Image (cartoon, rainbow over all chains, first blue to last red; front, side, top):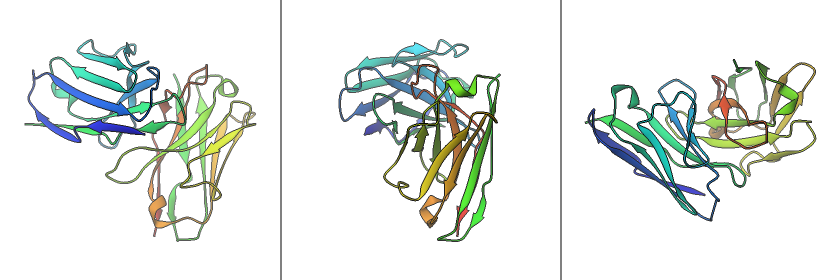
Amino acid sequence: QMTQSPSSLSASVGDRVTITCRASQDIISALVWYQQKPGKAPHVLVSGASRLESGVPSRFSGSGSGTEYTLTITSLQADDFATYYCQQYYTVPSFGQGTRVEVE
Amino acid sequence: EVLLLESGGGLAQPGGSLRLSCVASGFTFNSHSMSWVRQPPGKGLEWVSYVADSGHGADYSDAVRGRFTISRDNSRNTLFLQMNDLRVDDTAVYYCAKATSIGQSIYTWGQGTLVVVS
């Protein structure tokens, strides 16, 4: 089970944003972060907890180990207002509840 | 380019059935396990089911086990989800999702198909 926080946040362009996911057991960095925009399917930003997918801007980064993981956006851009989900793939896949990043 | 094209969604009555399909292209379909993931309107993502690359081996969430059946036809690059005994809380966008070539559930997603049970 994945517990993601916060469920929503308000931010401005240029802000640093941090989203956290906590697993109910050690998931050995088997964690992926997705971005989803309204009406669209999710797409991968980070896998293996910290491996940035090809084509994803370097302002996105993932970190963590064991049961605690973080997605950071260092300087929020207009295109980043979206909902973000974590998902563990160590066992049967499970998702965090999502974090909606909104305009402040 | 990986393409996953779902179809078969629509309106069903409680207790009814639907069969979803997902046609895949742009990758070697029979080398990848596949899953279905759903998203109720305005809510988060929920893993539904998985099938191995060979088609031998499947798993289901507790919410759908015994009612849904996943299958695949590797000769037609197509994934299926047979949904029986539908409930109102099965209402969701259903996404077809491709795992990585080494079986990790890091998903590439289709565009989804909406199922409404009412």
